Image (cartoon, rainbow, N blue to C red; front, side):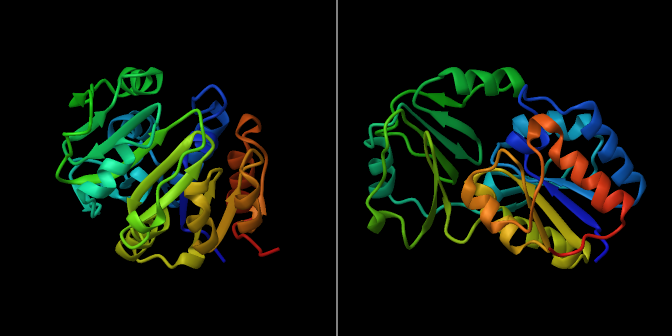
Length: 265
């Protein structure tokens, strides 16, 4: 099947181990664009730290942010789709009292966080925008929440009864994330494929983390990075090299640009 759309996760996929886009990756993306193939970024990042990379690549496609909870127009930056969580006080309080090292609440108006730690400071440095609120979250709860990011040095979780009907929990080594039920990078990808008149069989997706599993399983072709978690490698159609080895660029060059089609294994 001829590929018409490429969806790239950012951290661990598009970005190398130095958190930059390599020269080879940039060259491949330019060739994809010249070939008339749409390139989309699909990330857990919020808009402010997605946009600089998107612009540096000269992309003119919408951005999938916050694990699919938000999709933004590339030019106006207006939201094309926003999927807010159903987050009652009971769930919010459970997150706040979970004993996490830091809690980041991504809301429509910006970022709320428990403290401005090294992760948040890196976001500020990269995106140029400070959190709208930093401090205790016990009595502060945004009205329109898109995602919770919870970071901890210890394994923490929430009672499933608090979120199972209304939210998806994504487990990471250093914590977890919460988004609205049935929202994922795939749900946003499906929305954009419909908007562009592209079938899922004509789309290829790349990723490395737990928030990429649904996208790689359901895309026409799913490619896991060599540095991906084991569960994602099992879900993928192919496994390529690591992000340090330009794995995504190599796969796209061989199977999409040179071969013209991707054959199932």
